[in-house]
Image (cartoon, rainbow, N blue to C red):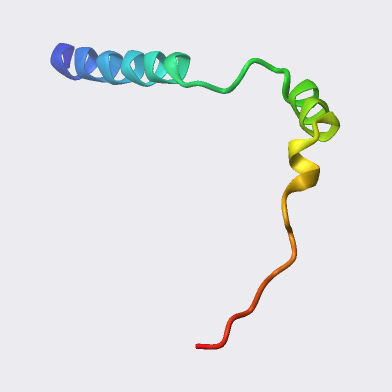
Length: 54
C-alpha cells in the first residue's frame, strides 16, 4: 500500500510539474494580433488562390 501511494504521488507531481512547464503564452495575444493587423506585411500577402493545369 505504501508503494502504491508513492507511485501515485510521483505520477501526480510529474503531471503538475509538466503542466507548469508548458507554455501557454504571456496573455498578450490581443496586443500581438493588433500589432500584426497594423503592420504592412500582413496586407502584402497574396491571399488569392491560384489554380494551375496539371
